[in-house]
Amino acid sequence: MNKLKCTVSYDGTNFSGYQIQPKSRTVQAEIEAALKRMHKGNDIRIQSSGRTDKGVHAKRQVFHFNTELTIPSHRWKKALNTLLPSDIRIVAVEEVSENFHARFDAIEKEYRYFILNTNEPDVFKRNYTHFDPDVINIEKFQAACKKFEGTHDFTSFCSAKTTIKGSRVRTLYKVSCHKQEDIIMVILRGDGFLYHMARIIVSVLLDVAKGKMSMSEIDTLFSVKNREYAGMTIPPEGLYLWDVIYEKDN
Amino acid sequence: MNKLKCTVSYDGTNFSGYQIQPKSRTVQAEIEAALKRMHKGNDIRIQSSGRTDKGVHAKRQVFHFNTELTIPSHRWKKALNTLLPSDIRIVAVEEVSENFHARFDAIEKEYRYFILNTNEPDVFKRNYTHFDPDVINIEKFQAACKKFEGTHDFTSFCSAKTTIKGSRVRTLYKVSCHKQEDIIMVILRGDGFLYHMARIIVSVLLDVAKGKMSMSEIDTLFSVKNREYAGMTIPPEGLYLWDVIYEKDN
Image (cartoon, rainbow over all chains, first blue to last red; front, side):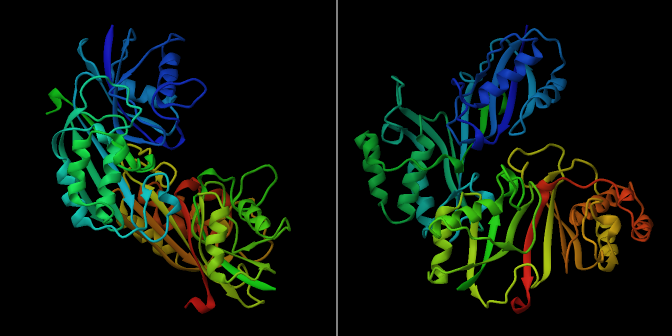
C-alpha cells in the first residue's frame, strides 16, 4: 500500500464547492471519479487539507490517498490529468509515509483575495476577482491588515453556522495588501482558518479602507465575539486557497 | 427612429459563437433577447462589424440597431447591462447618423492572440490563452510577422470553407509579437480579415518560431493560393477581437 500526497489547482467557477455532495459537481467528486477509473472501479476516498466553498479557487490545495497501484509517483500526475476535467489540474504528486495526513499535518495555510478596483467590470475577470468600483484607501487598508496579525479569538469573524465546538483562537502570521494597477491583492497566512473567516476579514478590511468603519471598531469586534457585528461575507470569486504548508516544506 | 452604435465586450467561452443560430447560446441571440425585453416583445435585429467563432472573445466588438425608444444614449448602457448575462458587457453606446453601418463603415480591425508559453498549463488561463509548452524563438516570430504586413492575397490563409466570391486581397497594417513573462501576444491589425485568417496566420508564425517552417516558405504559401499548405488553424481560446475602427475615431 502506498500513500500519495497530491497538490491540485482548480478553477472554482463551475463547482458547487470542494466537498462531495449528492447531485452536485464538486472537486472531490471529480478527483475520486478519476481515481476510481484508475483503480478498476474500486472506490478511493481522498482526504484534503480542508474544503473550499462554491466559487472559491485553489492555486495549491493538498490531498492524500492510499493506493495498491504500483505506478511510479512521477507518472501519477500525467495519468490523473488525462482523466480529470480541464478546470482541475494536478500540479505535483509525491509518495509520503503512511502516517502523513493532508489535514492534520498542515501547519500553515495561505489564502489570497483579489479585488478589481475599476469603474467598470471586466468580463474576463468576473469569475477571478471581486469587482468593487468604490474609492479604496490603500494606506488605511494596510493599517487595518496589521490589526489582524497575531493570535486572536476569531469568533466575530467566522460564520454563525460554524459547527466546531473547540477553540476559535487562531494565529495569523501575515495579513497584508498590495495594489498593482487596478488589482488589490490581500494575503492572509495563518495556522488555520474558520468557516468564512478569510472572506469576513476581507469585508471588514474593505469597510475600513472605504471609511465605513474605524480602526478601533476592529478591536471592538474582536472583544464582542459575535458574528453579527462584522458585516457582510465578501463573495467567493476573488478568493484563492493559495498554499498549504507542511513541516518538511520549511 | 434613432440609430445606436454599441461597443460590447464578451467572454466567448460559453458561447457557440457570435452569430445567432437555432438552439445554441450565441452573443447575438443574448443581445437581441435583451433588446426585445426593452421593446415590449418586439424583435430588434442588430448588425455587427462581423461574427466571431465559438470560443473567440471580444474586447471591443461593435454593432448597431434602430429603435423607437427615446431613452437618452447614456442610459442605454446601464439598461442593457442589467438585462444581459454577466459574460456580455456593453462598454459604450452612442447615437449615430441614420446611414452608419457597423460592418460597412469599419475601416480597420484589430485582433490579438495570446499564447501561454510555460511547461505546465494554468487552470485559470485555460479559456483565455492558448497553452503551448514548446520552445518558441521570439526573434524568428517577430521576423515572420513582418512577412505578413502589407497588401497580399490571403487565399492560403483563410478557411477552405470561406464562401466569399470576391477578392481575397487584404492589407495588414501591423503584425507584431511581444513576450511579457510567460505570455506571447500577437497583434494583427488590418482592413479586413477572412474566415479563420487570424488563427491560420498565428499557426504559421508559430511554426516558423519553432523552426518547423522556414521564412521563405511563407513566400511560397502566399504564391500557391491554396489553403491546404498552411497547416493547422490554431484553437480559438487565445483569440480576441480587440477593436473595430471607424472613420471618425481617427
